[in-house]
Image 1 (cartoon, helix red, strand yellow):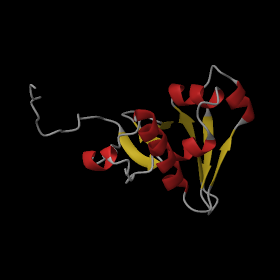
Image 2: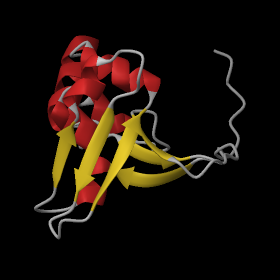
Image 3: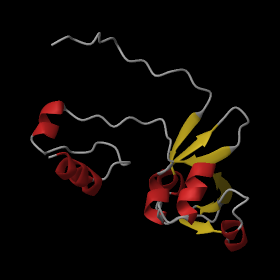
Image 4: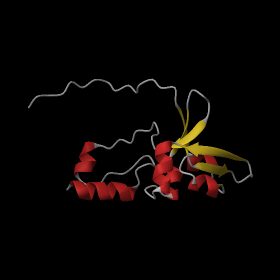
Length: 135
């Protein structure tokens, strides 16, 4: 068997900053809201009202991909809570499933079907389904 050439992985430089998940930004006691007219208008990105428990709020648009997934019911509100809020060069935040996080697993534990997530974007249920499908 030939071996791959392994090197130290370094994340590529990016101008996008990850502000954490929707859940992390809203915090305990916070709410999220969808604007009906905006949600129904497929020419627009879905806008989400993020409101903290203290009443402060901000409207953040979803990425095109996330907007489409929400409208097609391929993404749910629990999924939305775990998506990242990213801010690009223009300084405008947006919600995307394409966050900069990496979730790692020890190969030995995956082989035994005992993978335990250390980050929130792959739930235990998703991992279990992935492990069953792989067997």
